[in-house]
Image 1 (spheres, one colour):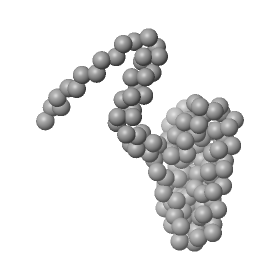
Image 2 (cartoon, one colour):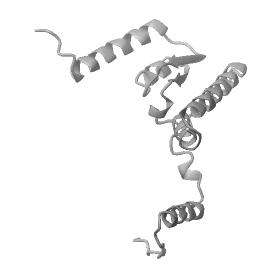
Image 3 (cartoon, one colour):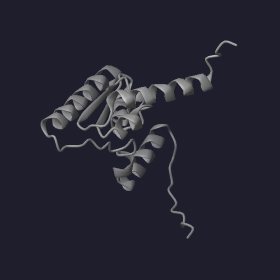
Length: 147
């Protein structure tokens, strides 16, 4: 019976590839650059070898990382081309810092980095302003929070 190429086959191939990657690299340290990482399928495998992993992908908008969210924020304001250049520069700066200092480690700030740091009053004002621009009259009522 021929392989269907379905999700189960893809999963088996990924497991086989992960084992091959781990065997090929072996234990070690230093920086590992995962080019075309996509959603980070092999990130854990690469990190388990003791290396600091930096994943780069052309489609930064697909990544649920700080850089992916940065791309989406810039692309909304300035367009996809300028966002790609800005993210490329950010990646080069990260790589430079990692290569210039052997003790440096990359810690992704997370896709929610910006959302968790915006002042609630500022966020509220922005939402009210956007609704008013659409022609709505906005009245805010503070609800008591359930304890």
